[in-house]
Image (tube, rainbow, N blue to C red; front, top):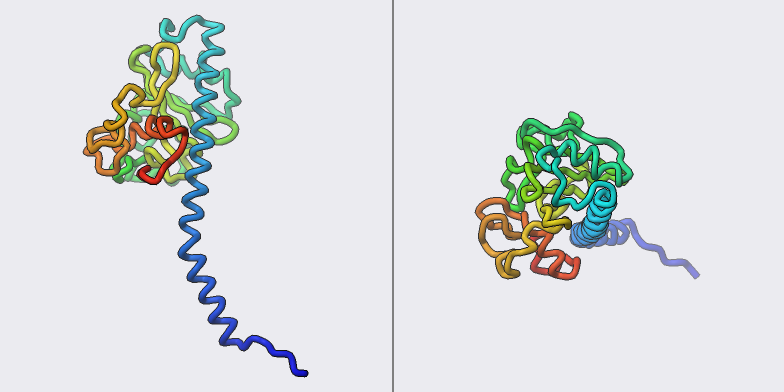
Length: 230
């Protein structure tokens, strides 16, 4: 009895169909993986930041009473970085093209380092006065502060080289509130966090689109739900 085999044409057709299916499903699979990885790293970093703050408080007293918040370099070098497993500490950046954890890599081009959700280049507040450090597992944490009531933390959960370097996707924002680090927008009304207004977690926000995305994620139980602007 003669064995039947696939013809070359049948094999090519099958491979073509498989290629189409993969091309249609792969972006969704990759997108889901990126979201889950970003969420896991964000949640871990949030925990580590507050643990570091608590450990530093055991040495120096309540964070809100530290007299060095006017120097982000001193807070990073003397208070917070010692409580992390740090790969490198970066001095305060001076220009748009020298962002957090900047080491002169080629990807820092004329469009700047980071973008808001709507594609606009982030030129503020992550320019002058931001001191940053990279953890051994590739998380970049930056601080810009002038006082305990004006201390802003920026977290790039996978470091600046990987990308996408977009607010609300791998870049997230926190503030110091008393003796706790909280997501920016923690005190906003829930409906305002995603409204079409400045700094909201909304791709159409007129400015600062993505600033409150950390607050949205936490309000949603550490999830990026279907309405999340990814």
